Picture (cartoon, rainbow, N blue to C red):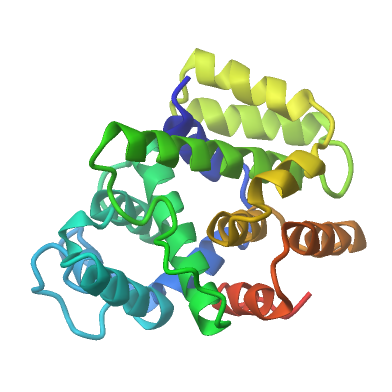
Length: 267
């Protein structure tokens, strides 16, 4: 089982229709970021990531939340070279529709880095920061760091699948849609079996809450991932978000900051 491939495939298969817009909002990227016809395929990704690949990008690149976080983290760790740039580039390129199709593992890594940036920003702006860099924002350099990343990704996968069930049972049409998109994404048969098994299980919100409780960075990542998975346009989904955030111990300020980052009204 490759949990990063699973996360990348799931991101393409089961995200809210507005998830792409929400992620672009965090990146500070929009349709104006695309080149005019005939321009190269880069879509200004290096600029939007604040020149992380050598400092050659615009100082305002990566706009807003994301640019601020990358600069803060880069300064804290002695430079931007250790940031998970590859996954972020793959994710942003996928969102903007440029370049070749990214591998699912790269997209999974990019999503973890994006969620980590959101968590860090929300905690700092709420005065709840513990000083830890959330898992996924830094490229792992040791086996232990790789295990931590995969463990965090496994919780995020579980949270996304659990959120998909929050407005009722996943019906046959939705099930076929998810599995079909996973096949299109190139998820392996073994990973497909894992996701299918998880989709068929009943909700397990208690496990998700236990995973995030006492770990504010992961809790904020879980909440952010949930907002990428559901539209939050039913009472059941709104109730689920309140149960999830309060159970994990996220303050109202942290929740509001995450919702603001993705351009949502407060639930």
